[in-house]
Structure formats: C-alpha cells, structure tokens
Length: 414
Image (cartoon, rainbow, N blue to C red; front, side, top):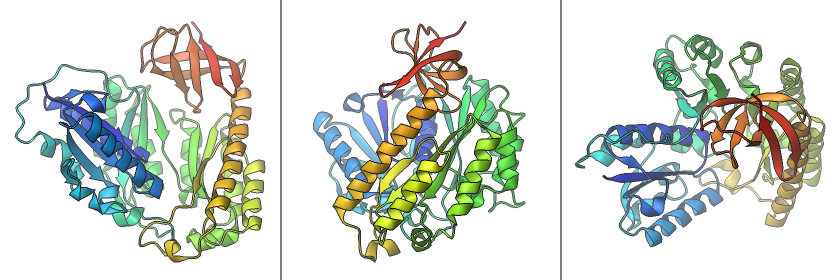
C-alpha cells in the first residue's frame, strides 16, 4: 500500500491544511506513515515567514533526499511563492504546488495511483484543526504573507458548521479554528459575517467539544467579539494576540496603526473576563530603527502586562517588503534582545502555571500511555499526567501537583 508522510512548517493554518490532506489521502487509499524516511510520498507544507523558515524547509528536503532517495516529494505552500521560489528546480521535487494550487493537493497526489481504501489509522492529530479563513488585506511593512497568501477569503458559515459537526461526531473533543487573519473572518462574505457570528453559529453544533481560537488581531478585537469569547463557555480561555511591539514609533513604522495603551486596556479586559485564561502574544524584536529605548519600552510593557507567555521573533527581512530596505538593527542586538524576552516569557509562563498547583483542570490527552501521558488543558497548560490510562483524544480531569522549569506534573482524578 502506498504510504505518505506530511511535514509542516510555520503556522496553524498550515497544520489545519495538513490535517485535511491526511484525511483526504487516507480516504483515497494511502496509508499515513509518521516517519518521512520510510514514506513513499512526502508532503512538505512550507513557510516563508522568516529566513530561518526557508532554511528549515531546505534542510528537511535535503535530509529526506539523503535518507529516503526513492520518496516522491510534494513541496507546497508559501516558500514556493516567497523567498525560496527556486524550490521548483530541486531535483528531489516530484510535484511543486503554489498556495493557489495546493487546495487540490490530495487529488493531484493520487492521480494515476492504484490504491484501495485504507483501514482507519491513528489521526494525524488528537485535536481537530479547521481552517475557516485564508489571506490578509492588511499591509504591515514587514510581512510577506499577503503577497504569498493573497487577499482575505472566508469559508461560508454553513460549510464550517457542517465540518465542525462531522469532527465532533467523530469524537474530536477540541476543534481549533485557524485563519491567516482570523479576526477578519466574514468581512468578505455576502451577507457580511464576523468571527463573533461564526462562534455563535458553531455553539449548538459542536456539542460538548470545545473550540480553541488561533491568533487574534487586537486591532479587530471589538466589544462584540470580546464579549462572545468571554461568555461562551465552550470557547477555550486561551487568547493569543498578534501584538508585535509596544513602542508607538515602532508600531507606526510597522504600519500597525495601534496604540500601546489600547493593547494594555484590551489585555486587562480579557484578564478580568476570564481570570484563568492564558494570554499569549507574538512579539518582534530588532525591527528596523528599534532603539534601546524602544526595546526597554517593550520589556516594561510585557513585564507589567497580564500576558502569560509570548512568542519572540527576531526581525527577518522578507523580499519585496518595505522594511527589508530600511537600515537594519545589528544581528548581535537582535539576538540579545530576543534572549532577554524569551527569558522573561519563561518566567511569566512558569508563574502562571504555578498559580494552578493544587487545582483541578480539565485536559485533553494529547499523548497516551500510563508512564508518559500528556494532556493539554483548556487554558493551554501542557501537563505530564501520572497514572493516566485514557487514550489520546479523551478528556480527563487533572490535579496539578507541581510546576517547575522542567515542566508541569499532574495526576488523573477519578
């Protein structure tokens, strides 16, 4: 039986695409093989958000070509259109698909293959990922994504609801809604819709399954959406915001048209509405023109904010973006500033985790096995769970027993 493996790089949207591809390929008679070194077909869903992402894609392709020279490589996604367009010329590539072409990836991959329906296998993920939006209409001066993903496009609410109902009926206890610019969901539809409206539409559909949101743009987190995510009990108390910076001058150069005071007020409202919520953010350091004073302003903002963690990105100039042509911050300064913020993020994450020691939380088992079981709580705490016999994908009650630099440890209750 022909086997396939999928390797993802980058964002949750890529993960959601791969989740759908895996199901479609299996329904066409291919068998999922977790190890790319042993698969007949290897699908590489690429990312070009940073230079490092492009390098990681190439490194993986070289590794597969060395370990599995007979594999047919399918290279798809953002790097094909972005900073690594010459991927089309690689001798290892069997098929190269742009973002416009990859919607039909399962059909293209299986064309001409003789296969029989495969037996059901372990799903690609224990939590279902559902792409509801793609593309972005904004023009941040550092971002290449609108060039490689195109303008914002939303799926129809009824189609999303039907897919969500199917996933819930199949036993997925968590559904992650993904979008390149999720907060803009529905603005391109006729009649016009919104993310808040979509969440209300999904509430009766998903039953006991919980819904998690991928990254939200704070500029579009209005009172209606904030009220919806705070009040609707089935939405995970985990909100990740594309903050980027907290210096007014840096935000202006980024083209963000935002005020740090507005960010601070929004974070306070989220924390007040859901005190147990995990609050995360994307942050860029070393943006062109970022001074030490700008960086200190960012550090101070993050320190006093209710954010519980942040993902730190050292600025990476991307082709054909305005910021790529501006005078750059020294590499050494970018590395130093990144290290400072990652250390701060680690401290804040640990303090958040320790605040739950002695409490019981509900979690979804993401890795089964009595000795090595792990579960993810609704508020995004990854817990090693002793004595947990529940299989992956099941919901369990966990008592948090310890939180330290080595991770969080808990025990299954009942």
